[in-house]
Length: 194
Image (cartoon, rainbow, N blue to C red; front, side):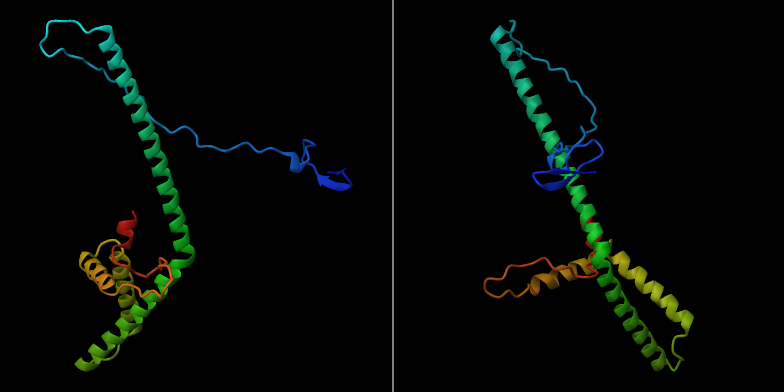
């Protein structure tokens, strides 16, 4: 449905409201799922045989209310941070599946080819025939499994990789900023991400 306003046609939605005039309400988080906990506060005069004055009682109630308020704020902040961390994790996983998985697969294929060449060289030294199709397929599966599991658990490789990165930091030209670059098949990469 079109309606002409000031000489220009404007689209209208099914309610007859021009699209440009719509006011969108702000979206906000739903309240966090939480459970209410109640505590009892006990006050002691530490052996003195007296009652608390009204000023002391007021001070205790005021302090408890202030503590409760700060605690609630801190919990809300922590919950919001947890949500942001989960969203950023999902964003990285999506980026990984779109872009980085191809780099990992390319690197794994290179390692598979190198492993097949090395295994064939060992067989030649021993006077045996080269790997047949089934042996190559089995070696390929073993190498792929090994490379993917290193992303979760490979303490020796992880230490070696970190030391190598420490010994060979990226060289930056004057005025260049260090950009986080994806490195395929980093040992224990996913262990650190989770």
